Every structure is written in C-alpha cells, then in structure tokens.
Length: 344
Image (cartoon, rainbow, N blue to C red; front, side):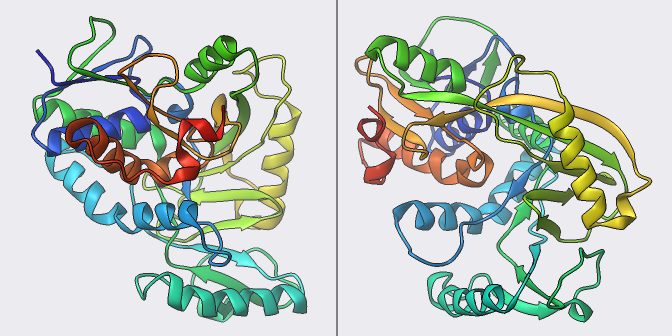
C-alpha cells in the first residue's frame, strides 16, 4: 500500500512524489500517458525569474524554488545515475534604449536586496560576455545569474528514475491508495471548468524548435519575445508561442517558422543550424495565472497541484515542498494567490 498516490507524471507530479519520498512516505505515481506526456514533455526549458521589482508572494515563491535548483537536481542526478540536463547558466537580454537601461539599473538595485546576494541582475557590455550575443542598440545587456536551463524530457526522465530507485512506483493505471494528489494538467482544469460551468483554467498552446548547434555553456538569450536556450547535449531550443485559439494541439505551423526566423536573426550563428525537431503542446493555465495548489475543489479529501503554465519547471521544487507539507504533515504554507479559490 502507498501512503500517497499522485495522478500525473509531469514535472509537478514527479516533484511532489520525490518530496513525499524525501519525507519517508511510500508513493505511487499514475499516468496512462507515461512520464512527461503532456506539457512537461516540451523542449524549450527556460527557467527564468520574474523581474526583481514589485515583490509579492508569487515572485518570492519562484525565487526560493530557483535558488534550490542546483542542490535539488544534483541530488536527483546522484540517485538516478543519469544526466538531469540542469545548469544555472544565466540569461542575457539586450537593452534597446536609454529608458530600458535606466529600468534595468533600477532593477539591479532591487535585486541586490530581494535576491539576498544569492544571484545577480547586472547591466553589462557585450565585451564582458564570452558567448554569442544578439545585437544591442545600446551595446548593453542585462545579465542575470538566477536563470537556469534544462531539457524538460531529460529532467523528467531523471527525476522518474530517481523516484523508482528510492522505491516509488510509476505506473500507467491502478487504484488510488493513501492521500491522493491530482497533478493532471489541462485535463484537470477542463474537469473543473465542466463541473463549475465556467472557465477555471484552460490550455494554451506553445510551439518550439530544437536546432543542432553547440553552445552548451553559454547563457540563454531572451530577445524579440523569443527564448534561445542552449542545452547540455549540443542543441539549442527556441520558443515559444502562446496560442489561446488553435485547431490542432500538437501540429506546428507558420507561427513556429516565425520564431525560428526571429531566433536566427537575433543570433546569426544559428543561421545554418539544422532544425532537428519541431514541437507543439498545450500548457495548463489557471484563471489566476498562478499555480493552483491545495484541497481539491471537487474531490473531497483529496488535493490538487495544477497550472504550471510557462513557469512549471521553475516552480516545481517549491510546489513539491508545500504540497508534501500539506498532505503528509497538515501544514499549510501555500501562498494565498495559489489557492484554488483564486481561480474559482
């Protein structure tokens, strides 16, 4: 018998399962689609922070999760015995004009306080960065050391392997045992919306591409609305779109073509790089845009962890912690804006 059943083997479900194992519980994860079958099976993997200003619970929650990343993923790698793909390589953003520079310098001051000396947000010249760079009209860039990257599928694979080596079970079906946590992504939000007769959350389609080009030690780049993310295996991911209306959840189209064109225009070194994969998938977005964590609104006595839209991998470590505390210890440290009622 398991103490905890997690429904969903995406990054939220796997992170919760891991944290429950860390606290001594026996765990089973059930997902008919397999590991990372939904949005967690994407390819971009940009773990980027919110800007260091107008601080709130959501930004603080994300900051704590990102800071915990290095120790968390190293422990996962040690247990799994395989590469997790995680690295905190930072992020570069060009500054378009004087106003952008002034705002960036103000945020640098905020980061000194809010990021507690654990990471930096700096204004630098291109000469200070030894990596491919986009054009910057001012010759200046924001470089932050909090941003990390990971290949989502590889991260899920490693975390699942670590869970199994610690005695957890990941199965396609089976009966619920012990405390039950629903981390079922878009399907779970659709169930809530149908029950309440109004939109509680929805799926937002994203598209990305994987290029064969090795700049694995370089920071990722955010420019012209595009994430350019060098990965551990000598590939570069670019993305992504945000589509509320779409005809096919898994087909790519001209919107992805535009992303690739913009990425190559920003980083000319990518111009001849082969596109080795095009990906499309649907990510779960709650009405409040924040994760939905806590008691399940429909299934009495059970729990929910959903809505990792765009920031799921960056938030997952802390999501696992607060959900394990709630389910196993009865301690509720979930931010008010993350509770299900915020989207109901």
